[in-house]
Amino acid sequence: MWVSIKNALMTRAVNHPQVNSFGTGDPIAIGTDNVINLRTSDRDRIAYPLVFADVLSAQAGRGIITLTVQCYWMDRVEDLRNLDTTVTGSVVIRWTDNEDEVLSDQLRTAQDFIASLTNDPSVTWTLQDSVSLTRFVEARDDKVAGWTAALNFDIPWGHSVCEIPT
Image 1: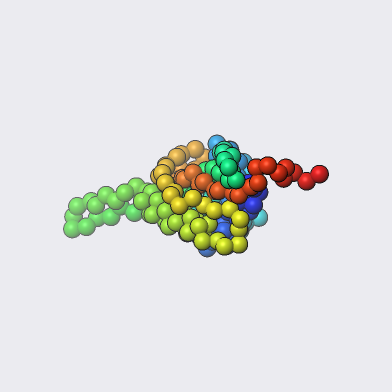
Image 2 (image 1 turned 60 degrees about the vertical axis):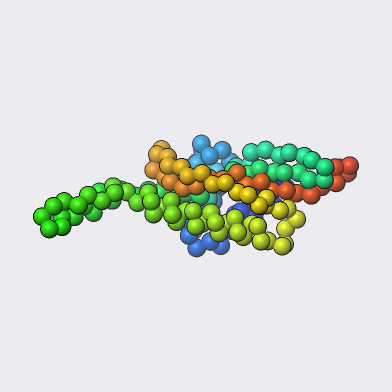
């Protein structure tokens, strides 16, 4: 179940023109060996923009298992302080970084993923209709901004049958 959803997310990341890396696992460990760089052979740094997924929980109901996956869409925030300019004798101070542009771009990327996961007739699971996105900005090794969402996937199962191969 998780493997097929993880593969679906990775496939979308590989094929999305504005995603350069994909990873899974604990988001605190972003930047370690759990990030799969898709378009670079150098794994010393993350090639942003990054999509990251972490399976959170599963809830079994009558004929349905709901798997909750926390997904992050993020990009590095660049410092733009050198772009201040003088206009008609006064200094115009611009924002010191591109955080707004990063948030806008990553929201579009998140929308692309949600739309493609919702409209995929080739899978057995269904992404629940309502997805709430939350903006974030963090600074560790890199200052990043983006969106996170808990994606709930409903997966049909026969709760009276053992699905583990013997």
